[in-house]
Length: 315
Image 1 (cartoon, one colour):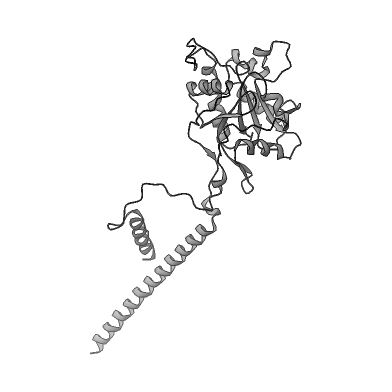
Image 2 (tube, rainbow, N blue to C red):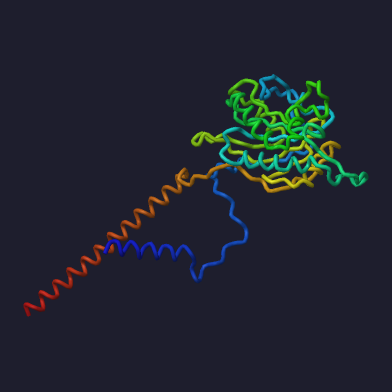
């Protein structure tokens, strides 16, 4: 009987949760997440025109100490990304999407310049460069180098060497910046310079100690040759025409409207919400109390019926 009562209660609860005939329809607007949702602070505040701190110091994947200005200043624009090697999902999706887009952008295609319609190619290490800053200040250079090679290995062989060395533009004997550079904290464990650059471009992230993960958005941040922000491109897939236009405008130091849908790397654990736990506990206690009450009522009814039968037999 107790099992039947529980099944009935579950069915009633499910129907009540689905709909009420007289209830108002849900609003069209999606309700904002509760204040306890920790990813509220993980976003991008767009700072078009803001300059990255050129004196910020990092180590390259090869261990070389460099300033950000040495990498982003010069004759070609830069795409800036923030990622880390142990990211559970979003970093790999974003960087895989980027490496998928690069070969298409590197082929001769329609020019974004209406004054010069002839086909043009934009190749990493030739017409632009990429700088990826590691959010995890404790990551080893070995881990960072392996992460870089993993994504460089996805590029066509014709573009891979230029991305690795930047020699397509600078010449075979050049020691200039690589086409795609991965940067680690200059001092292992010190994330001050990482945060300094992130704050300059409005990139907000946070460390989730209970999960040992970084919550962060996914954004390609285009920088002019002087290190000024010209555009934000969000998402994990990048259309070649958007990439071409963004690189072209960054080269001209022209700002452009952001495009794409911003994804955030964050695992929401409802059990971490104390209010949710309290609510679930209250429901369980209420259900258990109701079951006890029903059993008591059935028991009392059975007792009354039994007493009536004894009374009828005596009379």
